[in-house]
Amino acid sequence: MSLLALEGVRKSYTGLSRERVVLAETTLEIEPGELVVVWGLKGSGRSTLLRIAAGIEAPDSGTVRFEGRDLRQHGEELLGGGVGFCERTFRCAEGQGVLDQVMVGLLARGVSPRQARTRAQGALERVGAEDYAAQRLGALEASESVRVAIARTLALEPALLVIDEPTRGADLLERDGILALLRSLAGEGIAVLASTAESTGLAGADRALVLNEGELRGAPPPALATVLELRRPAGWRATG
Amino acid sequence: MGAERVREQQGSMQSPVNWALLGLVIERPSYAYKLAQRFDRTYEGALSLSSTSHVYTALRALLDRELIEEVPGSGTGRQPKPCYRATGQGLEHYQRWLVSQLPEERRRQRLFAVELAALMSEPELARTVIDGYEQECLREAGQSTLAGEAYANDAPSALASRLASEENRLALGARLAWVQYVRAELRKIAERKPAGR
Image 1: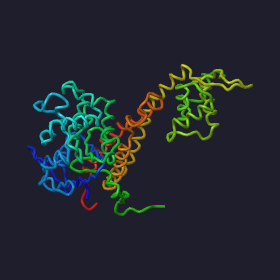
Image 2: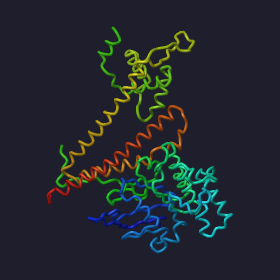
Image 3: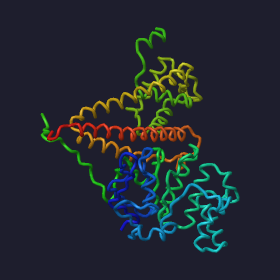
Image 4: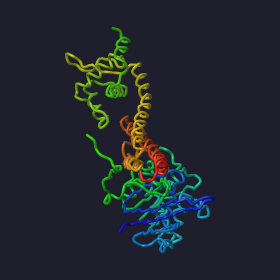
């Protein structure tokens, strides 16, 4: 049983003139410790796929299972626990300080303030953001703010981390540090599902996939890999 | 015979090995043997010398074109080994050659597009090819080296690895986007194709 399994997932949006299929019969399986990155052009449905995979948005049809449990029925209890959806934005009402932001999810789940502080500091250290703990959110650079957002999700100890465009807006020379962080989290056994609009964001992935016109393509999980079969046109004959 | 005459007779230098060797001399003046060793280390997997003597042939070509010059080495034997360093002209030509590589890349991509277009009468077959091409791009993109993982220092070889990796990663993005365009074209052709063909 895969950690996360999307089976026959379909999602479409109805615009003014026609229906736009964002995901058509999409199947995706992710194992623990696997880093899967989905590349797609703007508007390809990358974010929708990630929100559905995290149980935040429901598909029109098909199923999404996390550890065998249907997210449609168990999404709320799994979100933040087993499934960590990394929001890149911060709500100011939850505190202006970095440490406050990382602690807020823990406090909401009934963790004592003392324990929450210790776990939040540990998470910040894990992502290389311990130096920002005392800073205000407004003082953070784009890549620092991504690290803090990842720490906030990691503090809840998820088995799957879902993150939309982790390198968007990051300084060119900081970008690989974020990708290396995701790679190392996968190395520790956390499954990571990320998206990217830039091909540079695919580096380090166990599986790089492409989403285009509702179709998710790319290498299957290693166990399912088969040799690509070349098709011949009807009536084709070798000469000579 | 004047050097200008030699250059005219020999035409422009085409050998990638010669240009690669010039790059190494620009990076750091060296003896021939040391250059052969550095060549193997630096260009491993991308370019190779047919034999150690190949480096002497290449150095001769660079000397004839006055792209490099001999300077006395520090050896103390009866026949001190010459050391090679780049001339101002060598630097200038190397820069021009680097920039001139771009049309060569375009030529390769155009060749692939022409070869693919030959399959357009069979859109399904072309789609299989483009599926394989896309998978190869994705596989290569995933395997790209992260700058933070290794080579995180300022040594020329480390910088070269980072620059090459970044260029390749960006180029793969352009190819992936191009594949989406090819698919759209193939779909349009398939829709126009009369049924039964």
